[in-house]
Length: 278
Image (cartoon, rainbow, N blue to C red; front, side, top):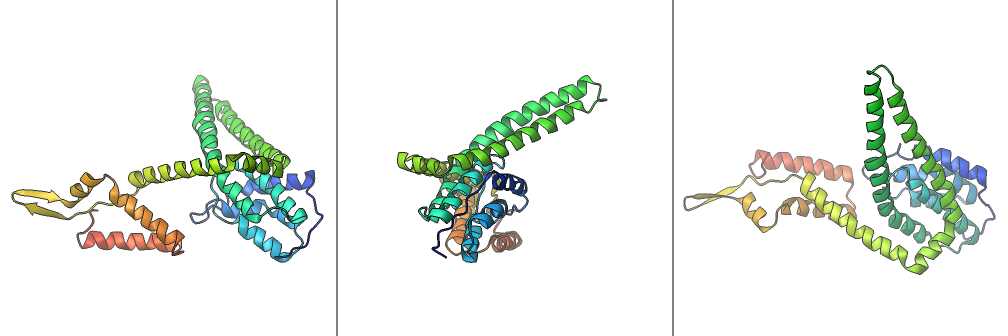
């Protein structure tokens, strides 16, 4: 990585380019990096403007390709914020690149909670109900209700994107400095971690389905091994398997596709030999 200091500042035109590039934010979504590839794509105008060294550009793209997942519209505040941080790093070299990743990790949890609850769980049902009511009132002859729903949802979404880019950049490094000095960043990271582990635990119990088919006879009573495990802790096997997947991903660096195929093979073989219940 080059240590040369540039003098390339972002202007309003660059921020508009950042806004338009960020329209493809979720197009690169995958289950390995989530919104990471889209984030890196959105940052193209910034990275290409503020960095002149190819190694610096490569490091920046790799930095923003890391796993990122939050509500798509509110993510643009983080994009604007990191644009200012990348500019500062390129021009002053007084920002550690690790802090760029740290602020992304700290904010994506809280923003996901706010965005999902207000945009998806509040605004969307209200506008859908209003649109359906208007369509029913017209005797199903007018599409105005559907058009209104699309316009409002798209309009609010674009307004949040625009505001996030420009306001995030405006707040920039000063915002990060204030958050760090107040200890808020550490608190956000801590509580976001608690929320994440809580959600993971709930998801493991709800969506990971592992049941043992084995049973044994104690006197005249047939005892199910699955019931015995559930008596210790309901959902224990799904939780253990989820933790095993995390270990393989994080510690052993096994790819997600490999783990998916492995899970399928283990599941099929387990059912065929009578260990797992279908």
